Image (cartoon, rainbow, N blue to C red; front, side, top):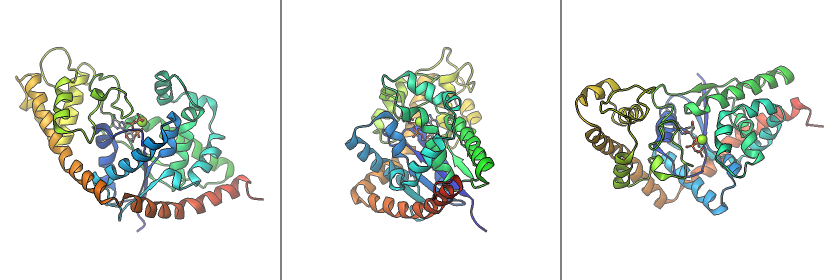
Length: 328
Ligand code: ATP
Ligand code: MG
């Protein structure tokens, strides 16, 4: 039986966070056993915020190394860099021409990201069309992402359907794969905002490479809610509920069990234990990451991955050109 196809991407915009790990990467690793997975370091998406060239290069390699350290097996999955497969940019342009200004204007991620920036590029606005191209090029069935990407995935489906109606049914309609718990890990300094690797305040996130003492400091400093009880109630106790979610996912204990464990105990004790749980969860990933950085065969893995990705993307792009009347 042919395995179902999975595609997902991650931007090399900084050091990966616990939000990326719990919301996306953990699922990427689990799916590699049962699906045909394509995972992409989406450096063309990072261009939307005009990164420094040297920094981008370094971040691209370290994100790829981090994915392998987190458990991706390069022999099982296709791991590659977006700009190594030119078809992404080509299809991205064509789909930009099929997405409407109204649709792109409604993307909450654009609204949020553009609010914080002095310079807003055209690329930041149209980036969901490039994301649609990433996914559709591979006949993707399933897209494991965090909750923040749900809207972009709906747009991807709309664009695919529009293309199929107009030019003939070429694209598979992808489904989102979003974890019920952990799909949206919140910022440590503001439980209203999602944890993000591009947040300029490092105390807002746990970096996957943060040393144990930094993790302890950040968690002890994390905001909490009024009252001193520890229970799950995202509406009224956003900060504590977020910490409980992190605790549960990193320890494997259920949230109910944790609520029981911490009945009658204060935030201080809870946070101290949580810090140790996170430190232990990241320890093996950090050790593998350091090994990989030294052994330095990430470039090789990515080169092989690009070849495998191109073998799928190129014939797909050829069909698109044909259907759209671009071949004369
Ligand atoms: P940036 O701020 O540059 O957008 P990011 O942390 O949002 O960085 P992305 O590269 O945009 O990271 O996203 C990679 C994957 O991680 C996506 O599937 C996204 O949904 C997921 N993700 C990002 N942040 C969180 C979070 N706080 N909780 C759960 N999943 C998340
Ligand atoms: Mg993001």
